Length: 143
Image (cartoon, rainbow, N blue to C red):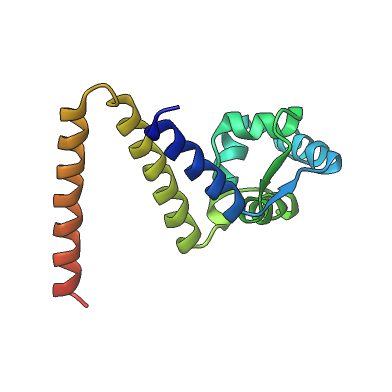
């Protein structure tokens, strides 16, 4: 196995260990489905409230995925206890955190799509560095 694949596997293992995964109980699966259907929500709407991809949410309901992180478990419990789940019930910090998670996910996928085009990966990295530098310089002007 080459070093790149080995490094990627080690990173995945490390991430899994650091996230303290917990099992998804059968009653939680049923509750998720009942809550979603009870409010006429799509997988996408329910997943958006929790802050995951719709296919991840679907896999929780169907049993294809058997674990999630403690952080996600907290959001699932929030979803299940909401009277009528709505993005409006999330505080601004939670909304911006979820938005940032989506952006990071998109960035990661974009970088992977460019895997066979190192020049594009390099251009992406350079533009991101420039953007980060611009933002940091603006934030230092307005403390």
